[in-house]
Image (tube, rainbow, N blue to C red; front, top):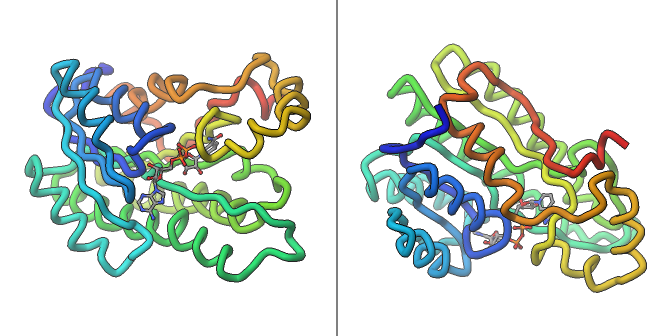
Length: 248
Ligand code: NAD
């Protein structure tokens, strides 16, 4: 029930970090991958093909929301259909709330929320026609908590969980499951400034019950679960993959 043979997954933000690892996890379960990211996904494609899997990449700026219709059509044409969408691409801008620039707010909302809304909508229409599909949005601990210096990011990730539930309600009856994964603190470019600050890194690590930060590979099992028939009766759920951070 965890096999994805014959399925096609569109994954955004696959140049590295969590997106690349999730694409590789889905490919290992049998899915053909189309990766979209602004900076190219050549290493993801190479590593999947070297394991005997199928992967293609499209380079595009997802914050150009008006281009998403043609971009989605291009992605559909690669293998003829999209069975799984993973909305992973995201950015973060760190400045104290009192000084947070509107430009930073707008850039973050544009990619993390507006593009996610539009891609869910486009994929949902495509999946409704086929009577099945899986959409997995990448949320955050800041879908539940306020964070420090990242008000735009926090608002966008609270929005992602709201959107996930809104789409899940409307499309559950059409055979489409829309869910989210909320990663805890994971070692990627997104968290590089925290990783570089030994004091902050240490204090966060001490608060994680598992005693360590997450690695991108920690998301592979959860994303395969939510992309496969194993989760056919799971709708609108936000699955925390956080080493126990929220339970503490
Ligand atoms: P990352 O910076 O390593 O990867 C971000 C990806 O998004 C890259 O592939 C990048 O090319 C792509 N991207 C950025 N802007 C883009 C644009 N305009 N158009 C197309 N692609 C674009 O970060 P990551 O940690 O792998 O983050 C992936 C997702 O996970 C994000 O949504 C992030 O908010 C979320 N997340 C990360 C953590 C963490 O601790 N690292 C925790 C919770 C949630």
